[in-house]
Image 1 (cartoon, rainbow, N blue to C red):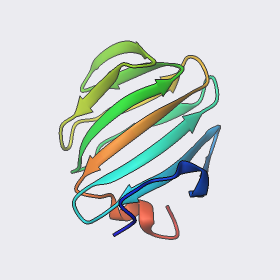
Image 2: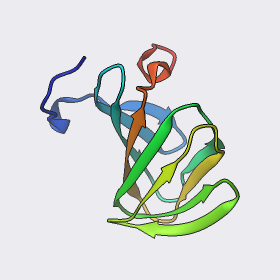
Image 3: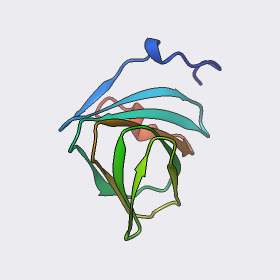
Image 4: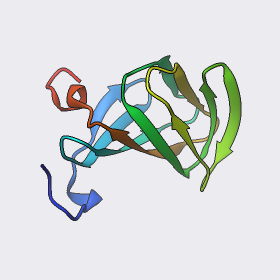
Length: 113
């Protein structure tokens, strides 16, 4: 388990390539909070996972596809992805998403992630 209070300035960023990087803000076995930063035009490739996901658009504008439905979302908007539903994003502007997963994404904690 990580600390109760999160100070983003003290968390390392993981470079994922193609203009995307993530910062694991905190987690325990049941919950994880992650910040994901995109340069303009970067793509969060369509994928699915067994975790529930709630995402807040912290900044920027994103085209978000969830289960075949597409919307453009901006700062202050958000979305929820049920388990095993295909979803992905494209950054129409540089921006940041804050993802919350339940249960925590153990795959994000492994060295190869």
